[in-house]
Image (cartoon, rainbow, N blue to C red; front, side, top):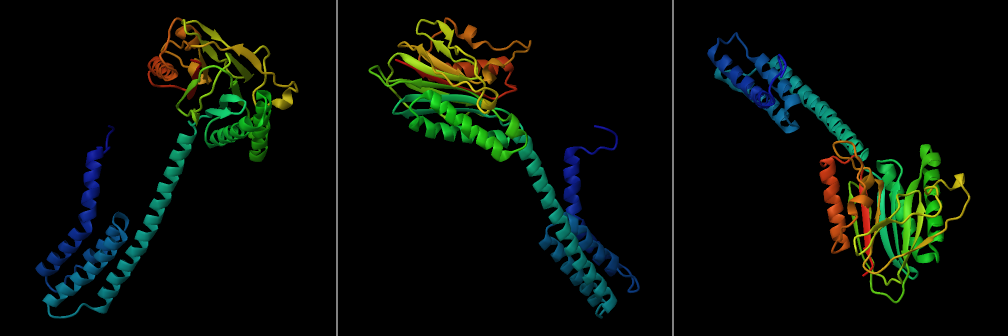
Length: 362
């Protein structure tokens, strides 16, 4: 604490005492008038009281202080057997009305300041809201999943997330192929960027990986989704599996396949593809790659918040290496373990949000 600074507790006491000052001034004025000859007047005490109350008290308290000052003036003059003169009453009444006006001006200023502070705090929070998303949809063509990461942060990213998830929900039900679903997401994101204009029209994009578990004669599949920071979306749906999974990857980290015996392998796309929203830079069509999805295996989809989690030495988290040789009772147990390890690795100070989605074929 520097020279001349007041401790926080002392400042609160000073503010409390200041609120009692108008009453003390009126009391002091009354005592002054009663203890001094009639030629002396306490009007300055009474006029000062409402002026001091104006910036410190509520409107009602300020008005009551003005009324109390007028009544005190009458009381002290009644002691001497005569009414106060018109000049004194006019002076006190004018000051009381002025105090009420000052009180209103101060309160309006306080409200605007509080509103500006709330907006600033909301903007500051919004700056840290990311665009991670995930969703699961049971459709006539199989159980379809998407995990993605929209460029940027803040409310613009949240709006783009809503557009992508909404487009996925609709396209997953209507489109016969996973490639067509990806095309719908591409066009929806481009339309959103054009609507928002500015930088988003040219640089708005989202990395995403889409997966499809075809219906077949196998057992039901269980899925679990998790978000850390801002994992937007939801996970639901059970489907039958025929032992394969189809994947379209648009510039996103490759999913991991965790086998029942502890082996872990990355499900990489045979051809690199640009993120959603950047289709004008490349005209090649999406091609879904088909991979084996054996019984007992778990497919893990995630955003870059997982692989970019660093420890105190700046080393990134490598889920493929860290999960090798380990088995988990259910998808939820896998996600809980991953979230706990990332929090422990980063000391709870993650620099990016993270979304995780796991689905197992029994």
